Structures are given as C-alpha cells and as structure tokens.
Image (cartoon, rainbow, N blue to C red):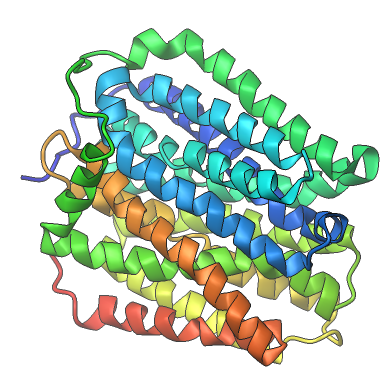
Length: 402
C-alpha cells in the first residue's frame, strides 16, 4: 500500500518544515559542490589536473551511497533532525580534512562530506511525507531546490572566497557554516524527533534493507534505474562545467563560476516548475521522461559549443542544461515517496538514492576515461547523452502508468 499524504495542514505547518529541510539541503549541497568550483585552483596546488576533481566527487558520492542506505534505521531510531545534525557535522569534518591539502586526506574528506550528505534527503522525506496530495510533487521539488541552490552558492561564493582567503580557508568557512546550522536546528528537534523506535536496526547489514525494499517493487526498480542514469548526467554538469569553461572557453574563474551559478538557478526554477506540472498537468513518470530527453539533448549540444559563443548564448545553454539535468530530483523523490509502503518513505528514499548515488560515483570515473581518450569535454558530454535519451524514451513509451 502506498503511503498516502495526510489531510491538508495549515500553510504555516507546511512552510516551517519546508524552510528547515531546504536550509539543510542547501548547505550540505554547498559542501559537496564547492569542490568543482575550487578545482581549477586547488588541482594545481595539489599537483593534479583540475579534471581529477571527478575522483573527489566519486569519493563523496560513495560516502553518500553508504549514508543514504543506512539513513532509514538511523531516522527511525534517532529522528530526522538528529540525523540531519549529524550529516551537517560530518560535512564540516570532511571539509576540514580536505582543507589539509594533503591528497590522501582530501580524498578521505570527500568521502566524509558524502557520508553527511547522503542521509539528509531521507531524513527530510520523513518530515515532508505528510504533505497534502495536491502539492506533493511541488513541496518535494521546492525542498530539493536546496541542491541547485547550494550549487549556485558555490558558483557565486567560492571564487570570491578563493580570491579573499584561498581555497583552503574557503573550504573551512563553508564547513563552519554547516556546523552553525547543525547547532541552530537543535532547537526544533522536539517538534520532529518523536515516535522513535529505540530498537530500529542501525548495523551495516540493516543498511541494505532499503536497497532490498526498492528492488522488491517493480515500479521502484524502474525509478532506481532512472536515478542511476539521471544522477550520472547531473554530476557531469556539476563537476566539469567550470573546468570545461576555463580550459576550453578561456573564461576566467569568476565568469565560469557565474555561468555555473546561472545553471543552478535555472535548475531551481525548473524543479519548482516541473513539480507544478507533475501535480497539475501530467503524471510524474511522463515528466521524468521529458526531462530525460531534455538533458540528453542538452548534453549533445555540447558538441556545438565553442569559444566563439557569446556570453548570452552560453548562459542560455547552461540554463537549459541545468533546468533539465539538475531539475528532475523533486519529481523523482515525490514519486518514490508515493510508491513507498506505508511508513517506509524514508527507507524507500534511502534505497532509491543508493542507486542514484551509484550513478554519481561511477559516471565521473567513466567521464574521465572518455575525456582521456577523446581529449574533449564536449565529446565526453555527448557520450553520456545517449543513456539519458534512452531512459527518457523508455519512461515515456515502455513504463506502464500506475
């Protein structure tokens, strides 16, 4: 039985948890996405190519896979706010390790940041699952705009921090912001961390239970495959866009960061718009199929991009790519929560995100391999357009609508 949203609560009871979960999502996303913006400076300082940031991102999302899969038991035992606090503290610790500038600790720091990032989305789903049915996709999409909002902050803020205090102190400052929010949300823990289960399993073995949960349901399995592919395309945009623009377009770091910020702002707008359309005009799976086509076409168009493009055209292109490749998550998570068994929204979200993060872990490694062979970011982007187009068509044509 699907977990049905409850009767409509008053607007303030919707807005307050939305603000809390949005703030958490934004800061943990900033903790992850600051690395790609720092890459053109931090890479040479560490003695590696800026493209090596893909390995750091892979380590981060490997941590996210573990964190998201284990989140169901932790949320049940300790509550979504306590788990979110732990995630923010882990993000702070990971950035502190990365700021050491010792490559082995930088990689460990990436893993720890991801370990903090992973549980925050399942925790927020446990808070927001009581959203009224008529706004279900919209509320989840608004909350998920915290991810591109964090990316936009990274694009706009990180170059300024680098110029002001250097990339290491910039990483430490972002970590400090995560720590301060972790302390601040402790004030609302009593409101959301109730009906806890002290016996909820939190072992490594129990972390696989959410994965088994989503694999046992045909419709959730289909969404998991979609998450693998879409998550992979999303991370190629977020991880390599700034370096692509600096190296292939000869843009300054500040201007490249601005383009990244514009792409993320477009994805914020897209997430809200796609959520409204999924609630009002079409089924969520149809929306997800169309977004697959959009991100696939955008990735293919990288072949046509070049240094001769005027800035306004580059901004339009980045906006379209961002709105589709980074704009799908809210509709996706709303559908996962809707299909989850009664009382298992957090666990199902964690299980589905395990596969999304799997795509995010594997894709940068494959992207780097294609980049090494082709010597072109545009060609590498176009290669990963194919699976997005295939899944988009599959979602529209072959998946039966529930």
